[in-house]
Image (cartoon, rainbow, N blue to C red):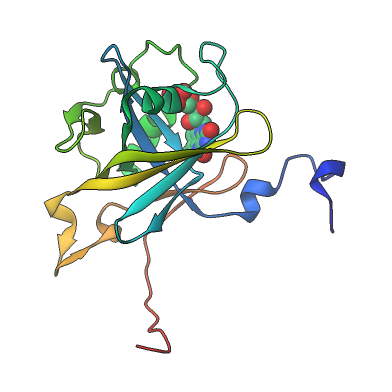
Length: 201
Ligand SMILES: Cc1cc2nc3c(=O)[nH]c(=O)nc-3n(C[C@H](O)[C@H](O)[C@H](O)COP(=O)(O)O)c2cc1C
């Protein structure tokens, strides 16, 4: 089949997210100007540069209690910082609970039964027990076509790795099994790896 998005796909559900899959999940923690912590998953998320290390996530649509966006981007605009937590398989229910569209003054760490830990380089919470976390300073926000579509870029200023997951000098993802987002209501979990050398290696 072929379709032009402006004409519709004709399927019962939009296949777009199933095409761009699997996607890593950036579990974004922030703090608002009044000190209330916030946590939400974003799967339009990725790393975009090594030196200095930089990441991005994209926010789509607006909450009724925010001015044209969601809580995460509103907090980042106010404070200039955010933290990206990695989602282990064991955290799937807490991650899902933190995605609920709650009023902006509700702390999703409490709502999802998670403990916040202070970041080292920024005034921001991170998720206790997350296998890794990236402390980030906002570098720019890019507005995209459409309603409330924006991309947040940040430079990584601090990296947390749980020591249990460092094996033979490598960050061993099989020891915590990261969740990835697919289309529809589907997820994948990384349990098996294989390696390929590059032609130039
Ligand atoms: C696995 C998962 C991935 C998500 N990815 C995104 C995303 O990339 N962009 C987005 O705007 N919303 C995404 N959402 C929805 C947000 O998590 C949800 O709107 C949340 O309430 C936003 O919280 P906030 O207002 O505290 O930022 C995702 C939800 C789930 C469960």
